[in-house]
Length: 456
Length: 96
Image 1 (cartoon, rainbow over the protein chains, first blue to last red):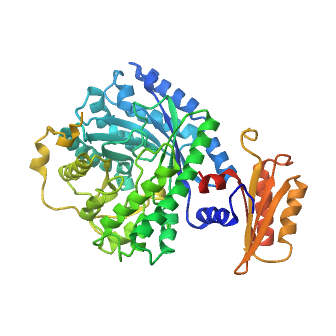
Image 2: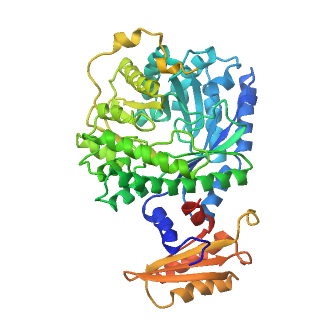
């Protein structure tokens, strides 16, 4: 049939991907610079921030829904990322930035986005006064707001690891869990600690609008574990070369859709299109799981021996297919392995196949890190800091992004379950190593950048 | 708003169990709405009826949302799944 050169099979393939394989655009994220909002008076600062966000993002949700309707592709989330608040607020003469978080929350509700990211600071080499105020405002801010997400970058390959910040973040995570204990530490699900954070990531909770970004920008995050899963299941006999090829072709199609939606959203909003993030982002929905993909490759349970190799192959093939499909690829771009948001990961943890050590190994070869991991409420701040330090070391040495989003769930023990609901899912409490890291974390200072940072 | 920027060609797909009157049901709505059918193809795969239509909605009486709703409710009435999507999504996904 002469639809330009598109045949019926391809049309039906697209429809099947959406209808039965959970293909969707995970997020359209509008990045907004707040650098012109700075003011010494907190009231004026907050007013500037509120006005700028509500003006720039006024049409975001409507345009998202229109694109969804025109193309018949679900766009699950419309979100906003802003300039790291530590930079915007530094001039304000106040002791904490909770009021700014409340302003962001109000602006997000006004324009109808479900998350706003950028309650952030970049402290990989050291903290300014504003950075420190921001970090200390995190627990209250996340407890008092619903939609605000926070991220802190504590290490880069070029700068090394700021171990003072790592130590501080252990306490901040504990405090955040404590202040949101009525909701099982939900605040920690909105807080990410990064190494080598990307400045154009559209995915929450780690999104912010980086300093090298334009005034406003549209970034798109695609999804599609279900589509990749089905493609693999259709080729049970394929060797790894063929399998990689199948994944590449599938990733290509998924990414093309992201590119189309990003360009169209940018055009309709009058905002430049930034990047497509090629991440395979799972959801708690059945069949939308990265763990299922690894198991479909022939592993009895995700987490068994071979899992790291399977994930490495998947991650690489997704990138290769995606890179051909889009002119501008950015953000995290790889497979996500958030435990609570992936039904297959949860099953693997419950079966005893997957633990925090294997997850750490997996983060060496995929896009993020220890993501949405629930640990016992009595886990010490130093242990959490040490987990962050380990992940940061992996990122620093391998020149990649790593992150920790960990929830020490108050009053819960290993084997119990915590339910966050919605896209955040539910998670079994996982064991951490019982031996202490206190003295190591208390040393403080900065772990120097590795020798391969000396590239100039 | 965007009608001028986007081309006006829409792909309508109908999938469901084969029965009498599917094509008539769909094309009646299109005729009522002044939507021109440019191309049509149908196959039957394992007793599943699949019809793909390429239509031009430039002179449609209703806007795209209303047309989509009318088609969807007709689909419910005759027990098939009808979707309408802008043509670009297919060409963009499968071609560079």
